[in-house]
Image (cartoon, rainbow, N blue to C red; front, side):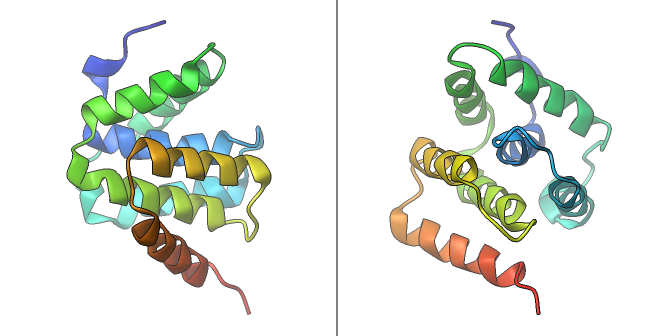
Length: 140
């Protein structure tokens, strides 16, 4: 496996989680990609983030998805390079991307569960984050 750990910033890790959720069903939806772009453009955690990194980080995620144990490697990179205080932020962003198209597929649900477990997000906190994402992405 390639060693990407030294090249991932905390912002890269957040993007990686969002891309992973979007790609989890092997179908990158425009709605999800627009949501990732909107999040990167507007949230303070992405201040001074170079948007060109989205493509680079996406390729890292795709490469890892094709490797045996690639998901484990991705979580290892995220835990190694993302400050623990941003673990709930990562989960919240993942939930926003998953909810962006109005439906959650089985693969997205499984990956969200895995993210919650890997980042040690307490179940009650996760439920609140999930509820907020659902509320933000409701349609009339």
